[in-house]
Image (cartoon, rainbow, N blue to C red; front, side, top):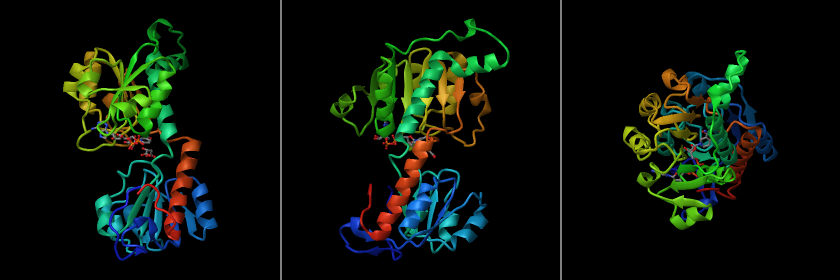
Length: 335
Ligand code: NAD
Ligand code: MLT
């Protein structure tokens, strides 16, 4: 959860312990197909909730939100500064998911609006999706399927390779990175990884050998990134790092577009330095980098990492429970 400024909109029961903070929430708008369990949980706890399928323009959303003190979004709705600043009744924004990139945190802070996310709700879904992309890359499944659907029976074109005995480099050993690693170990992959906030000892608990990135590049057959997109991770895989990798390295980005520099990736794919990429996220979404998306060695998905019934149900439930806790002043999960 991201909690920023506490201002006059909030009733702080204790000046010291923000876990006792109460935000009076009476009416919440649920957008972006948030799981319906959110509505049920809010209403069971006396908070009116409207589940809307509308895709609001900015002026429409500003108008709509005048009647609400809370809003829950997934990733489609961008809670921009313009919206936040023009909705004086808004006290809380819930993000049913991990990244809060679509919420203007600075503006929320300035305007005393609490921002909460659901850090663990879609971890397993995103980890499984990462593993799916690794498997697709190793056995050319999407291309083989497309070829079959085009009426061909081309066994020679899709020679794959085993994952057994290969090395997976994991950049970012947080919730998703480590779960993806654990799962790929069951294929017999060696897992190595880097995270500035995770110690060697902690990584070893997950059977992941901690290394610096410069040690990972020449070792890994596959590299998967699981960091937030921040200045330190933007373009983490770039021309220079690709040059240090094994020829034919395969890369996966199920985290945020731009962690792997898209132009450098396309160059590496064209030169053969990169042997394939599994992409779920893009610098611009919906994706506009068609030369990359359409490259034959790319397996591309439209940001599906969290798109499972289970993941969405967990996120919907978690965000609603957090709103209820905040309204009751019982807990501030994740602060
Ligand atoms: P997390 O916070 O649990 O883990 C992120 C890790 O990245 C942290 O351990 C952090 O220390 C590490 N990190 C930060 N800077 C780093 C750097 N320079 N090098 C290496 N590691 C660094 O987050 P998570 O829940 O595992 O999510 C990871 C990413 O996946 C986020 O960007 C999130 O938004 C994204 N995500 C995508 C989908 C999807 O649908 N594709 C779904 C869920 C999450
Ligand atoms: C997240 O940050 O939770 C994921 O990217 C999924 C999503 O945007 O819904």
